[in-house]
Length: 111
Image (cartoon, rainbow, N blue to C red; front, side, top):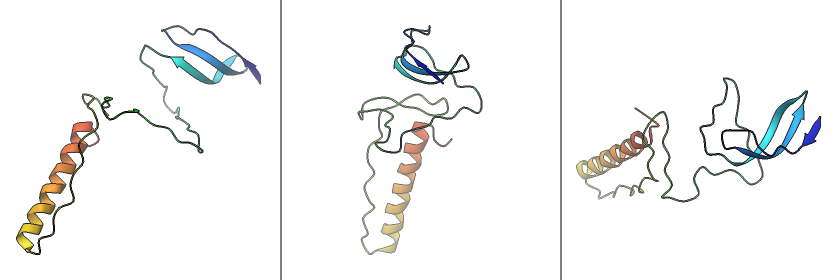
């Protein structure tokens, strides 16, 4: 395996370091990317197991899944109050479940 530095790879991407195996890039650290990134079928995103990885570093950064319009982090949902009255408790739980479904749909995680 050859280790080297590649300064530019087109589409506005700058790769700072890369590992080369038989003249192909097997892993790279991308510093700046100002174009879409397309992964071919069967390619996985492998993450470090020590520190972890975040998608979005602030609650106002936008994210969407499966073609949904990106949105900021949804608001929290309060735990339903348990009043002791069965009908009120069921209504509160149903309301919380509807809010959870709304949040998941807003992100595009469910249809």
